Image (tube, rainbow, N blue to C red; front, side, top):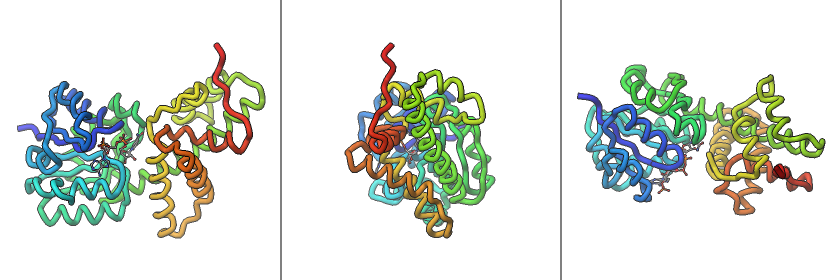
Length: 299
Ligand code: NAP
């Protein structure tokens, strides 16, 4: 019999990922803390679980996509958590971006109950989650990676086994150093283009296919030009990731001066109450310093 899949955490990313599991033909049981977010999945054919323990009891493979390290601890180890319902021989896949060290501790606790774990953080934004084109970086045993492959293939396109448990999270932080660096470069480039009096949309089109191209430029550049701050990824979650990077870099003794600066710039935006806007809002911190703003086109 095909493996039963559970999904815990139906936020911006989890919605698309769970829908794609259903589209791939998996039988899926879902749970979300805010119950209303389960409705579109139930309409699409999923069962609604009562809590993470119930989801685990009905599943062989349980995928998690919640916000931060304490949230993953809560849905696995807390009251009504996965550990209370999970069957021996099950596999837990955590797609949230959290601490690599806590990931290893949780995996140990699950292993004592004969439950395997993969850390499988994701990249590709809300668009990648909706379209099933995520990049998924996976840590854990090769046999568990092989077991999970059909689940990964339903949600993502570039699926890479990067090492032992926790290695997926470390590679995800590598990814996030690049993402925030691109966001800063994009912000400075657009302000410079605006001051130089060029059409911003044409400037993006002219450079995106060359050496300066990036996902951030192509997807979030046009949003900045339109002053559309709807989040694919919120400033609060971006700041959480930069904190995870700086914590890990501190332990490793690696200097990351650029990433440290970006941490402080995001903090100024949080201080202004902008934490629920998209991470491309980083440009607002630079607008403040520059004394002018990106103007949306008039046509
Ligand atoms: P989101 O839209 O804010 O959703 C967060 C989800 O976590 C919601 O379902 C929320 O439930 C749930 N949650 C948070 N704390 C919880 C707790 N203590 N107990 C139970 N449920 C809890 O965030 P997202 O953008 O989908 O991101 C989810 C994860 O993916 C994060 O780790 C993020 O860093 C990572 N990620 C995001 C992106 C992106 O572009 N958005 C890309 C790559 C990776 P409620 O609905 O009840 O609040």
